[in-house]
Image (cartoon, rainbow, N blue to C red):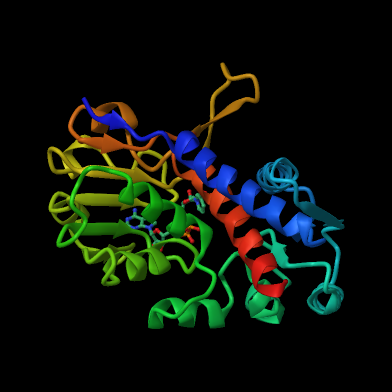
Length: 289
Ligand code: NAD
């Protein structure tokens, strides 16, 4: 039976560190501030934004809560970002994704000042990541590598298989894992991959970020592998209070029988994502101060 990786406990340590660093900044008269922009009332986005704002308050930081109607135009959103870029009291800017389809996500992300790009989605941040230069690292991949580093398993030379190639998880994660400081050999799988199971079975470390509930079953993993489940999928469950429950991309019960380490959903990668965001905000404020 696998050891269950406690993402909440690992996240707590990062929050404590951010809180200490915030206290140092507060003494200098600087209060780290993240502007959080949310368009519309998508329930998942509302719950993500609320969790981020709660974490900011707990760390002693300011959260500027900018909830706008779903009808907000791209021009209005870009004007808001431009004003936040100029505002010296704001250290980080986060636009909760996804945006309504008529708004070009790429234009919005690119409008954020890279110095305030605490999500790490700006082309400048991603370029720095590829080149190994200092910059903001996207929070979910950063959180995953932090979890992996805490495990008593060798990462150097390990075969890591990343299932998913999104700009916010799969791609940056593959880059991070292949950097010299981790030194894994990385394979990226996606919808074009032939015989997925034949590849995932070779993984010492398997990271599932496909957004497909229970896609990874026990037959797809090597015995003793480390399995990181990024997926957060709402599946209908009439017996649950909310009418749904969260499922990862991994068939947890079956895979836990075979893996050496596994993250649960919820309580694995999710808390680390928020912790890394808080860390990025304090870092942005330190750099600005
Ligand atoms: P995405 O939809 O942008 O990308 C999914 C990727 O998986 C695609 O590149 C696609 O090629 C690949 N894929 C999908 N189905 C596949 C299949 N059957 N076989 C092989 N490849 C397949 O998703 P994303 O934004 O990267 O998010 C992935 C999942 O992670 C979602 O469930 C999302 O909710 C979750 N997520 C969680 C956190 C967190 O903090 N826990 C953060 C970000 C995303």
